[in-house]
Image (tube, rainbow, N blue to C red; front, side, top):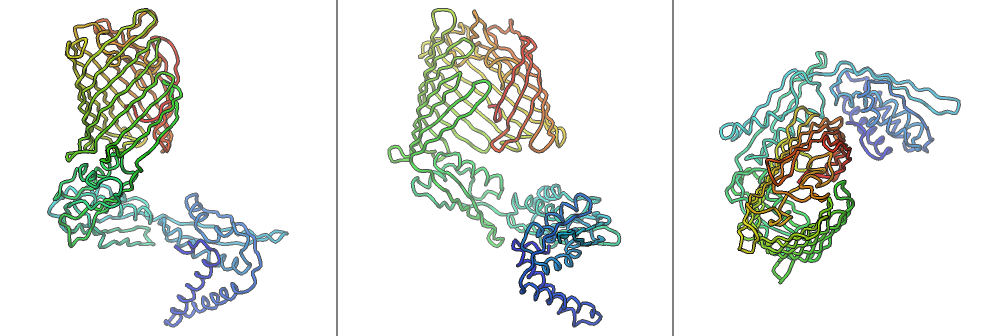
Length: 612
């Protein structure tokens, strides 16, 4: 496009010189005698720039359809330079004269190839000038045909990848033709082709044939996939404090794997999830002459040995909170991370100490830990001390943890005689995140499952088995509408009384991420006003969201749940409400107003982030 320079004088001079060269070359062709006038005008303009400038303040009034008006206001030189007070009178005259051609060049990018442009200049008594720019863009060009051609290995190896590229090509027959949509469609199709197997894919031919009389465009693109690429070994750089084999140990890619961008992203996520690296950049060679076992160049930026993290926040359920952590990442001189962390809010005080090892050759991280938690909610206090060992690994979209934890819990309530319970608990935890966007999901699901047990006499007061699961499903209805379904179940199966099981392993319900319309953890076993945790818990939530803009939406929801020691005596507590949704820079923010149908109370909620 003409005249996009950031410096007005340089832009004007460059434009004049460019037109002078064009006019001079054309003047020596037969039948273009009239263009000699362009030479004289260009020379006059260049000479005028060398003279002492006389300031010419002016305004521009654009009469055009809204979309065209916005385009011209932002990019037309005559409009942009009106904001300056150092435009000379000669420069002003040049801008006015150049405006019609600049307008035609600009509106052509939006598919208007036969515009009618008129400029009128008036001046008031103070000498301030107004330029009235009238633009009738004419009919917008429509796409008459789209032809996508593919060459290379994709035509015989992986037609699914070709179909994926065709699917994301967003320009179709009958659509308005614009240069930006044309470019975006080509680039999206190319990225889709390059995302798997064909890292070296490229566009070998691109043509948009415009018929300005018929106002139609015939589009054609040829993509060359090139050969299939396979992945090779890692080339790690930037490691100074911590051994480079840490990156190798969390690498999920095997040499010889077919190239897949999602696997590169997974490698980046795995490296970033370790505590050692502040940033990770991965680059792959795309030389079509060397597609076999192309090396992966991994560049990392390391954290220092010592680090302190802290933050403050607020949630309706827990009130204001402050949290922090100190880490030393080179314990024993062997990159063992040692971490002390804690959190204080209006319902809970929590502290934890952990010493971990670097990931082993299969990506597993072993750790020992100890923690102490005080929870005070619904007139019930739970003191929970824990020590244990764990072994965890994160792969693709699945996190797995095995642990052995000793619990020593004490529960106090409105009645005298606090209860205590101890247990040695082997446990398995599994989390799968399968969503289209980890921060703002619109489709897919998140599933968490836990299983654990204890045996009486083996450092435990009772024999029990514990199961817990939480699932959240996202179902897009339309482009702006979304259905969210959540289900949660917890059960402790034992013949002993519930007070023989550590209280922190039992369940209560209620609150922003449970059953809205009820206070936080207020659904449970009510004993003289104290809400005690129970053996069983079930909650279900359904929510319909409508997004009015990209960042702002509304929701209506229905929640229901129960927590009980005896399933036959369960009482479900329903709640309904409405809410506002905001895609903030740090994550989803939810503001809800819910009504509890059983307790007949209205509760507001403010939450940040995805539940669990």
